[in-house]
Amino acid sequence: MHYGVVFPQTEIGNDPEKIKDYAQAAEALGYNYLLVYDHVLGAHPNREPRLTGPYTHEHPFHEPMVLFGFLAAVTKRLQLTTGILILPQRKTALVAKQSAEIDVLSGGRLRLGVGLGWNYVEYEALGENFKTRGRRMEEQVGVLRKLWTEPLVNYRSSQHVIDNAGLNPMPIQRPIPIWFGGSAEPALKRAARLADGWMPASRKPDDARVLVEQLEVYLKEAGRDRKSFGIDPWIPIAGLPQEEWSRRVNGWRSLGATHVAVDTMRAGFKSPQQHIDGIREFRQVL
Image 1 (cartoon, rainbow, N blue to C red):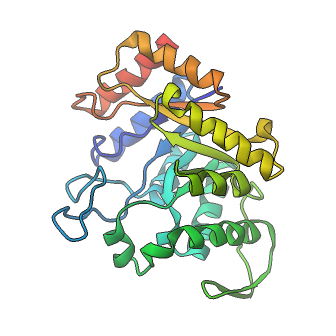
Image 2: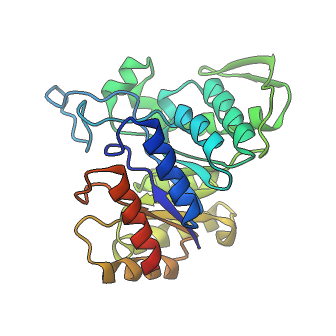
């Protein structure tokens, strides 16, 4: 099993030295990857239709692609993972270019977790259609993989026009691994058909068992090998006694999880150093 840390997006602050210290501490503690949430814009929730997600305009978010360019220079081994990047609200060719560049600068350490998101205001501001995001993402994944593996691409659809063009430099990983978030039936089926792995977020293993069983059925239907398909949950330690940490890790291991990350947000920590202490304590318990 690979162990990771959830970058404390909303609580890390804006000091680049503190951000660097956190990433380097995670690497020194032996963690395998650092996972970053994505939001471009936060919106005020008082509107129609209502916004019911967990974040508003008051929650700070570092932009994952720019952040990874910075972290690629200050770490040597840590895999850089988006969990998740809201892919359908972004231009596909630009995501392909940014991802390839991060992969080059990090020496092949990018894992791209993608999903649909919930903030329709963000989609509108970025000029994309919120209602067609699932269908759009399916096409985007295929286009990304073509751009990462073919020097010249010819592709034309209602969403994309690529006329004998390609990326340069190409990524080190060809293609970069793409993992999906989401837990609704369409999301699980989409992951089984198209993804390299699934990110069930912070669900308890007991609660996620039925989802894993559904996923395994969909993988079989898609002709996929379950052993080559990853699962990456994260464990929020806020309000969670230490004896439960190992139980959850073991519970996920029994479900076939290949990765697990510790989330220290909302645990009452007031400084980046306290988040570092939190991931150190989790590692010691493991």
